[in-house]
Image 1 (cartoon, one colour):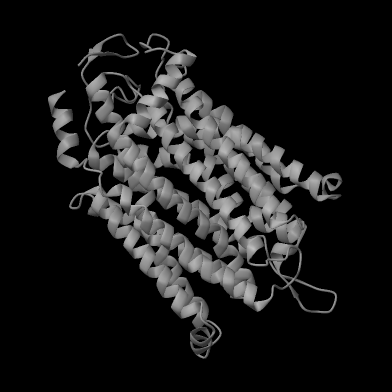
Image 2 (cartoon, rainbow, N blue to C red):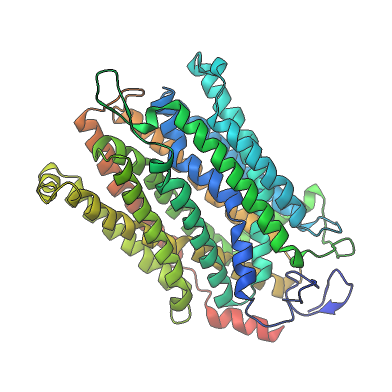
Amino acid sequence: MNTTTATDTNTNTHPGAGQASGGDLATGPARSRKRDVWFYALGDGGSAIPLLTIGNFAMIFYTQALGLPAALAALALGITTLWDAVTDPVMGFVSDNTRSRYGRRHLYMLVGGLATSVSLYSLWSVPEFFMASNALLFTYLLVANLILRTAVTVFVVPFTALGFEICKTYESRASLQSVRMVVNMAINFTFGAMAWSLFFQDGTNADGSRLDGTKILENYETMGLVISLGTAALVLLCCYLTRKFIVDSRNMEMHGNGLKDFFATVWGILKDPHANKIFMFYAVAQVGVGLTAQMQIYTYIDYMGLNAFQKSFVHGSTMVGFTLGSLAIIPLVKRIEKRTLCKLAVLISAVSGVAMYFLFGQTGSLEAIAKGGEWAVSISFGVFQGLYWLGCGIIIPLAVSMIADVSEMNFRKTGVLRDGSYSAMFSFILKAATSVGLLVSGFALTLMGYVEGVTKQELEVAQSIANFTFLGGPAIMALSLLFLARYRVDRSEVTNLQEAN
């Protein structure tokens, strides 16, 4: 099967990066050098820092610190996440069809990443004028997030496609996504778990009682400045250190770049019988994951009553669990098929959620654990939180690598490279599902009687939120297995296609 690369030579290999100054990975060794993989993974900060901090703290910031009703906060975040999702396929199509001396990926990564850094700060530094009413605050949150999400799309879609092109074998794709998730969790640990201690130290109310650090406005502005600078630094490092994969695309053969071609590409990917099963599996699983990610923060604050250091410990255990799950992929994928690993991961997360419901969601069992000392609850809770996220740490990178497998299978059969479009459709599914999770969590908080802006929730309300966290996410994740059951792509099918072409 012949394709035209940037150098106008015919090849029968996946033209991932084409002819790069550091060697042609398409025709070189199947395994990319570990250093290149880690250099690439640094770029995950361009999307991980903004999206993880929004996921961890945006709802708390706008509801607890600023007093915006939970339903309105969730609506604004849900709309902007859906916008982010809708623009992903467009960005994938644009990136795939870009002709530039700087290639199809890096220019967008640089511009989008730096724009993300600037717009991220504005989200956490709200001008006083917009705090005058809920309508103004809702408008500010909506517009600031729309700008930020657009910038993230411009960066992350070409960035993900670049990863598809760097690694091209069944195992190496899983390894690259594993390393990427490890970096993601290191970022999450630094700006998520450690944020409680770094930025959200508790204060003191007028009556001398403890004021939770998440209710102090200045803490968010400080965090916003630090994470904005961190985002810019990681984007610049990634673009510079992966410059060897920049390929002049001005002479690349393009397979249609009009509006009709865009819709044809999107429809073709959605009809791909292998891809749509992964999309459906991950869409349902991500709703559960996103729901848990949002609600667990309220559980830490309102039900478990953790102090800043205990929050860092428990939240950090989720990142440790996720990281261990991602690292486990590297040896396991050599012995076990990806779809089987995904099933095992869902089981781990579901069982952990049920265990947390019985151990921590019931007053009697929680009091029994608390008799073991001040840290007995935090440590035991952290263990099961870590196990839940260990399962998620397996599912997410594997799903991305499975889409990369399917993208190459499509290329081998059609001769048309659609890595950007496949990665964009996956990103669309991820963000659309996250949007649903945000909306569900916001309206669930309202239905359960959550009161915005108060220092303490009623015990019954806090317990309902906690139990919804423990059971809701895992139950939805379990439903995702219905779609994975019909996915049949395995190592041998991918390898046979590569050898045949």
